[in-house]
Image (cartoon, rainbow, N blue to C red):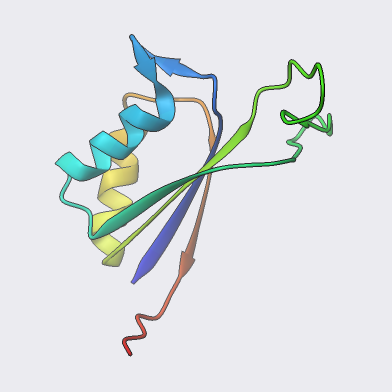
Length: 101
């Protein structure tokens, strides 16, 4: 199995909806096995500017992380289809093992 992690800013939009919402709905339409969106408390990106959206009087964009998991080929095909529509964000993939209790 393959896990994809998509890093974006919470305030980014796609059309009239938040980008994170568009991506999660896109993954649902692709019949991905599972996905979760997380709002970051603090973070920084390639420009090394610390973002603290919960600080008093902060205008920082909160970092977001969307994680999804499925079979390797399905994840790669989904990412290719997503990249045709969305160019922003940073994507990391890694092999994962399914562990059931």
